[in-house]
Amino acid sequence: MNKHLSVLGLWARQTMGRVLALLAALAAAETALFAWALSRGLTRNIMDDQTCPAPVEDLFDFARISWAYRIAVVLLFVLLLLSGTELKGGRLGYTLRRLRISEEAAVLWQGGYNALCFLLLWAVQAALVLGFCLWYAGTTDPAYVSGQSAFLAFYRSGFLHGLLPLAEVSRWARAFAFFLALGLASAMFGYHQRHGRKGIAAFIILALALMSYGTAPGAAGLDWGMSFLFALISGWQLFVLWTAWKGGLADAEEGE
Image (cartoon, rainbow, N blue to C red; front, side, top):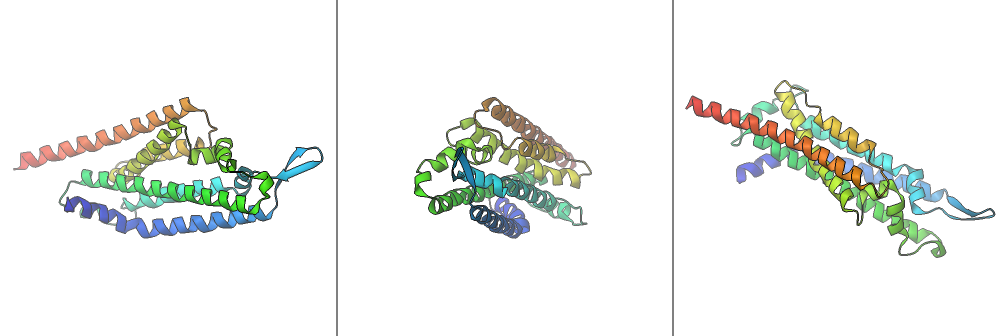
């Protein structure tokens, strides 16, 4: 088991510092954006001659919090993608071939690590959003907020609902299928590059997820369809790894 954990540590040492820096930058940027939105005193018309404070989801839209999160996803994707390549003349392939486990097993560990990084980004974003909701409730006239204000916002906003789908199981399934699929595909990109091939699956998954991220609640058909597609792509990636591992095992047996 130690040899597998050492491989996991290899991937973590390569990128964890930059991942944490990215998360800190996201938190700082979104806090500044939300503070700016709060300072604008946004309102919403409720009658011809009467207004009320804008609901919290309007502030998220005004501050472009969803775009900050999308940018963070793309930056994390690029960071993890490049960490497994030799595009800058590195010798990662040579290092992996000297490990006590197969390169294919090392790629699986990288895929798991990458998926955890995307999950960590999601957790930080969810915590920020919940914190902003509390901030909004503490600075808004109590007559216009209640204990249900944040709950309702997560059903009215496509971005918030995609982040925390509450009781919608299909959206949870879609979110975690995305994390797993993108984690594996971003690891596979480097594997393909090191072997002189092109891996485009990661870009397809990222594009599909970002284009449909803000889908309104109640799109269970789309959610399950996307989950199936992500699982299909992941299954193909695993089949490629398994085939390569079996081929390497057969070559080793013939050489004995």
